[in-house]
Amino acid sequence: GISDQAIQGPASYLSELGAAEALLETQPTWNGVTAEAVARMRLQNRFKTGLDIARYTAALMRADMAAYDADPTKYTQSLGCWHGFIAQQKLISVKKHFGGKTDRRYLYLSGWMIAALRSEFGPLPDQSMHEKTSVPALIEELYTFLRQADSRELNDIFRAIDAARKAGDKAKEKELIEKVDNFQTHVVPVIADIDAGFGNAEATYLLAKKMIEAGACALQIENQVSDEKQCGHQDGKVTVPHEVFL
Image (cartoon, rainbow, N blue to C red; front, side, top):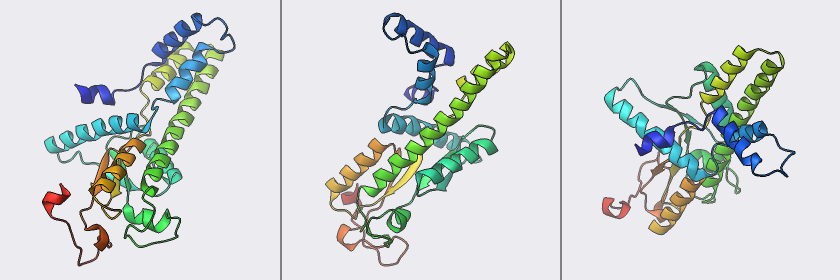
């Protein structure tokens, strides 16, 4: 199905190499580039845009939701983060701890963390007084750092392939190429907190669109009346009618 196609891994090492060789054969003046360098760079840059990430992670999350419905022991865990470096180090640690896997491990982006730590006005309460672009900007930053982690880890494997080749160790070379083919990306779903405090339904729509374009696949949208916005943990919230919110 579409979901299976969306969450499948990138092309294999040898298929990318073959594609690069075929391309270079048609371009004789590109003689300063090796097919292997092209194949490796493509594998290190699997996701071209935030929408590619959003489609991939949405399919992943839907599959995880279905798995949880069938078996509640297969729950997901979401780790809070307010900076790309924090997200990167968390996912690097997750992969090390779980044997190279990131299954059912997400990132959580909280609105109050944005207000407190990412506003150009300085630390603020969670009342939507920060810039509305702050959240999409952080989503984009998170995925920039996660893709960098992919590139770094794959580069280490590529160097190991070169070393095995130099030593004439065919078995080790084959093992490392299989490691590339089974590589699990650091890119995981981000659950991002949004709110209606920046304006009307159109403003909420535009902000949600911007967040999806940055890579978010799951949004938490609060339904408070925009000019009565206050911290969601306080009493006395004024919410819009369900019909209006929907």
